[in-house]
Length: 434
Image 1 (cartoon, one colour):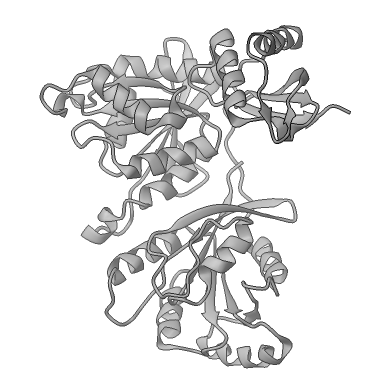
Image 2 (cartoon, one colour; image 1 turned 180 degrees about the horizontal axis):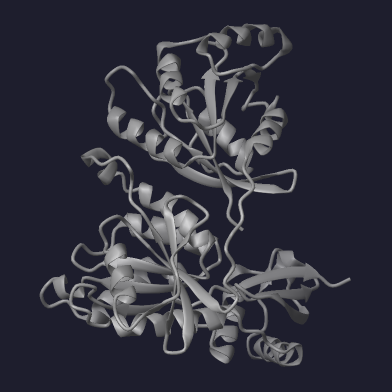
């Protein structure tokens, strides 16, 4: 289900990251009493009143010259362009600042719902001071305290009331997939190369977001949907250089895909940003295929086995994914992509009969008994597969706290070896047998 996007914006050090952490329920954003700590956008998922939404934390906007000022401003403008609801956060202790007025000026032309949140209002006596923020011309100020949680519920109520309902086009007989990765790794070239040869185009459909195009097509008797994303409306060196932009586009595409194709540029090598982007697909529990593009431009003497070993080393969490070497420019290896997508999708949809599953789990325990952990030893009584996409298994045991992560990994590997779950993550949940 596609999620609405909430962007938190404001001047430096007004408490955006603290409120972000409150919304997502985790300490994901670095919180430090130093202006400018948050430079890149940080993403999380929040839930309130049965509604789920994404939250993006942005760097503060500064009108004075400061390190990373232009890059931060670019990040904020990108977030504003994508957001469904904007939360403008100001500092209730300091009052209206020049930076606040600069941010308000940016928001006047967004045509997006804006909530003005006055942060650091830690007691009732300070609520009256928030009235001065009416001068920003953005409606009723909402007093909150990110540090103490005061008013956060009211803020979330207002966010939910403004978030649009989003629907998604379902393709019952097709496999939706998308290319994800850093900018300039060749995602669009790969999409065009797949769609440009031996294709049967059904029709082009507008996606759930204005920057996405869904293109259903058939190949070798199988229906697919290629989910592509358009570029930024604004062009410029700063915007093109913002690597984190790839993550926001990837989130939207991943949500609506069954398989994510992680693209790595062979001519550049593996960068930290590749790991960040691929992490979004993993968190979304999607089937994944790794495609190394521009192999024709790889360093001289580089062997595919050597590059694949480096990928396995740096992407240990993607050890289940198939690795394919291609060149969108020359077309070499392109014929391998769709079969790998189909295999990964079919793996993610695979169901295992309960009797066979329990036999495998029992044999696994007999061959390799569980280790002692947390002053106890795990005993799995029986197992059941409860869902697919990804395959999700519930292990009913004596106590989940006795489950060491290495043993869970062992059980996952046994399931992969036995049932060929290549290309898909596996979700294992422990429950106490009652």
